[in-house]
Length: 220
Image 1 (spheres, rainbow, N blue to C red):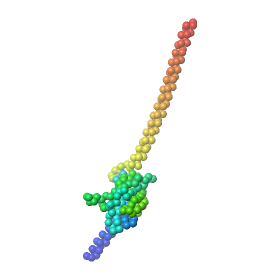
Image 2: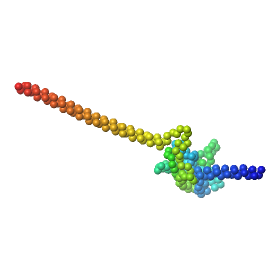
Image 3: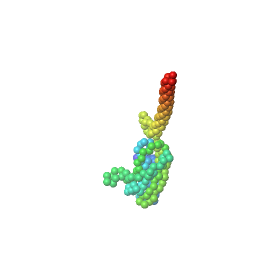
Image 4: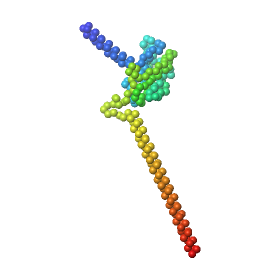
């Protein structure tokens, strides 16, 4: 009986260790003064086109959640594809009036638009303690953003990258067609102008011939 209880306890401890390891690998946890701050994605895996958020969890030295940091005191910028966002305010998810949300959790919502690695720069203060860290997605931090096709079934929807490429190609064809029409119009206009000019010249020559013939008749 004791062996069975020990086995159950050992299995439970193993499962808990796996869960904790999974949480740690999905977030970066660092100490800033008396505060422990975890940084990562709110939803993982993270997919292109799916609503997500940068998640920050703050606890004090005793492990108690800190849920009274103003959004103006702590912000995060997100960098990907050679571009960096504006500072995104981190808003507390818990509501003391309703009891909803997670105490100590702060989120800055965004929708990733390209796959690949993302970098979070967290900066500001927590009750006067300076916070400044930059973390990029990796196997030991938080997930890189995946193409949405990886989670689509049974049919895959074209990604925004594919659609953008198709639009660019179509735009190029339209531009080429417009240029061809312009060239054809210019050629037609030139031909019309030449025709009108030659026609006018023919009329003038015809009138001149008539005048000369009349004069010759009068002279005779």
